[in-house]
Amino acid sequence: MSDPSARGVVPVLEGDDGFALAESMVILDFLEEIAPGEGQTAQQRARMRLFAALFPSRLSSFPILKTEPGSDEEAAAVTKLRADLRAMDLFLKETGPGPFLL
Image (cartoon, rainbow, N blue to C red):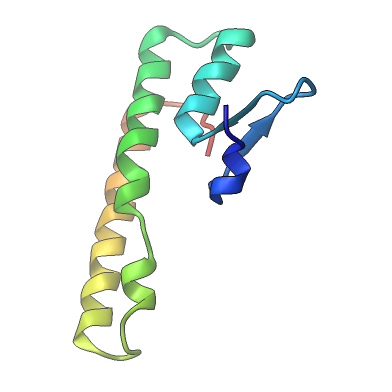
């Protein structure tokens, strides 16, 4: 397997034996396989995987960084980010008490 860290991808999980993985969901699945979480139901794990799959793409702040300060584009990007944060907060409230891996 090629070195995941050479691709500039983070996070990377590296084992003592040279085994390395990149990409958050792949790492989480691997860790769950080798040390299953105690007290978590399959439904809880599935909801957290859904969260991990859906929200990172929605919470990107890069559009804000590409705008001129004080511009209409910046205001629109901030408005979208706030809406996405509200959606994330609602999702977490509906999911119930943690544990959350954030």
